[in-house]
Length: 140
Image (cartoon, rainbow, N blue to C red; front, top):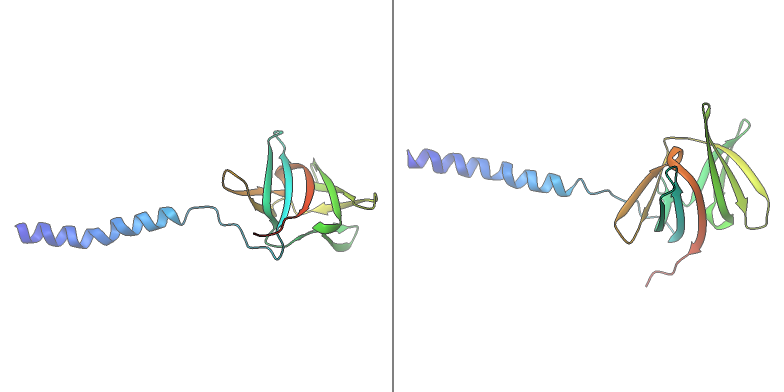
């Protein structure tokens, strides 16, 4: 009887250890962008978070549509952005560093990522209200 209990415990141990590993895998993973952009993001509930390693789907540019044309805009050219939600989707009005304003239709479910002082961050385009580009931060 003791042998059976011991065998069950030995067989069950990997399951319990595996569950511990699976839980640690649930941490939000942030893609490693090619540059360390910092940004302040305000969501649709007016919660503001400053992040480093800011990227959208791991890229350091926004991808959107202007009419029938697809366009990518480098973060380094952007001063700020305002995201407008409508029944037809999400439009981002980018204020460029040179003062021009560019409007793009965005993929509402595309995610942006970053690292805040509290932890890793993920936010979908449809959940962003404003963004302030703070520039590239040197990696120590």
